[in-house]
Amino acid sequence: MKRTSFDPTGKQFGKLTILAWDAGKTEGDSHPRVRCKCACGNQKIIRFSHIKAGKIVSCGCHKDANTSKRRRVFFDLKGDYGLWTAIRELPQEGAIRYIECKCQCGKKSKVLLSGLRHGLSRSCGCNREHISRDKATTHGLSKTSEYRIWLGMLKRCRGRSKCSPRYHGRGISVCKEWERFEIFYRDMGPRPSVNHSVDRIDNDGNYEPKNCRWATQEVQCNNKRNNRWNTYRGADYTLIQLSKISTVSYATLMARLNRGWSVERAVNEPKHT
Image 1 (cartoon, helix red, strand yellow):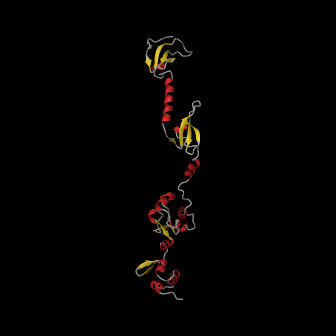
Image 2: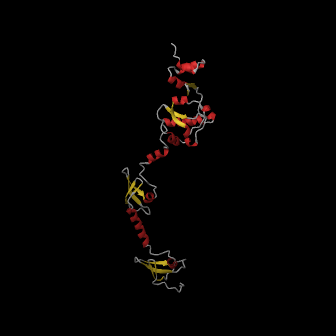
Image 3: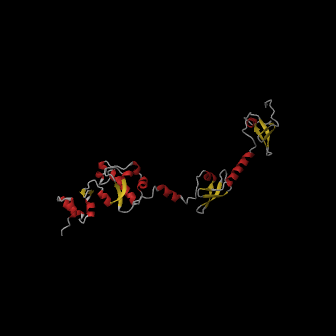
């Protein structure tokens, strides 16, 4: 075999010390090889170009050392992996490593080490139902009266209700933010009582935070755009408000005013039996 004039005998590369050129020849391989002695004591015949390029630095003993070091590091990491608590490493099955773990619910199981490290396994499955329920739940208020009021508001302004002509037909809409119930509930807050519903302060305005409030039926009736306003003692009142400050009922007031009575007379004249 043709040799180079360079004599590497006695030189050290990594953990390898070259003893001599190897006289043997592998069939189909014309690359020079050398016999080496590793720091661990093992001797091995290796292609000289691999040693010179730094591709091989030992007989392979350093790989086992690195593997043992990784295992020790894992056991030094005391902690939980989701609901798992690592107990010990089980005997390796081929190239697959398993860890014995205990779940928060008390169940023990063997789990792939790679699954723990990358967060692919976080429990024995006991919390699967809870996670699925949380993913399917957006706000958890779909059975509340606030949610039904919000749906009714959307239907009126989208032409899907019998009273839509008074809302959608007049160009009244719901602001973009309130198309999500969570934002509507955040801005309006909980309904004060069963007697309250959404009221627009400006009857010609849209459903939006600055124009809406929770109001009782009485307040809403006094805020209707078709209300009949009457001036009494320098102030304007609706028929409902006039009936409250007088002894005359709402129906009687309406009948008297429809017959052409003045507001003063309609309010002050007692009802004849």
